[in-house]
Image (cartoon, rainbow, N blue to C red; front, side, top):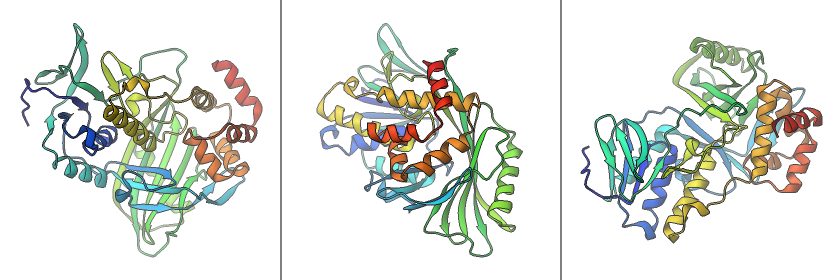
Length: 384
């Protein structure tokens, strides 16, 4: 669509992915913000089923109606340890990308105060104190609008920053015979070779004959595309012992895991999602952190409070993440052993609280005590 460049907006959201849409829906559903004019910018309104989000929650969440499957028990296969984990009071939930996009855009269409602009964003910056958005075919003066962007930028080079990539490929497969147990999923299965770095698979069953099987790596560089296919097929054949199956869907993604401190606010622009540091640096989990941030922003806007009053992630969690990243990046301790020790020596709910940045000091002491001390002490002193 063509937007009247003279029209004034209260909020401009750059990027119609998980973060942008999560924030937009919370704004338009808040009665205190019902009169706000909003511009959403993205290069394309057509979104494919390009990803799956998994996360854990105790209670029904904002997007509960979109949860495709959920489980209260998870299998874990690690180093000399395997278990069926009871994660109560949590449920491990799965939302499919296509369901999320379809729902969000159908809701947005109900609100005439929201405009959608198709365009490739080249830059968001400020000139003489006035923010502007440059697209390939036009430049928008943002006026007095608050700008939120989820568009990920290449990291600036800092010699002390660590960057690992979480990269993954998944297949939704269908088997001839019923082989999947539907009441539980596989959270992590380290019964794959570790020659590239920390690698594992997970399995999310849809029914007895259909499941999403994903192969994931934490490494500094990517594999050749055909190598992911080989690893997936090897896992399905050798570990799941499935010889005949049909691939119904595919997904592939790369998530940065980094010690870089992303700014929430810079040069007149608020950064959200991965671009605003909402990816958990040591695990790559993002969805729940996006939802927390989106709710905090909407609450502040509704109360007419400065967004800069939103509390940052407690520094101790960044310390934990950066220490673990250092260990994984420098291969000082296998990720397979770290995660195996975490789940072998701690209650599952404690581990999940810790990975959600919601743990108590008591939780954290027990978590730290369950891991080999020397590699973590060495990494902590090296990093800090």
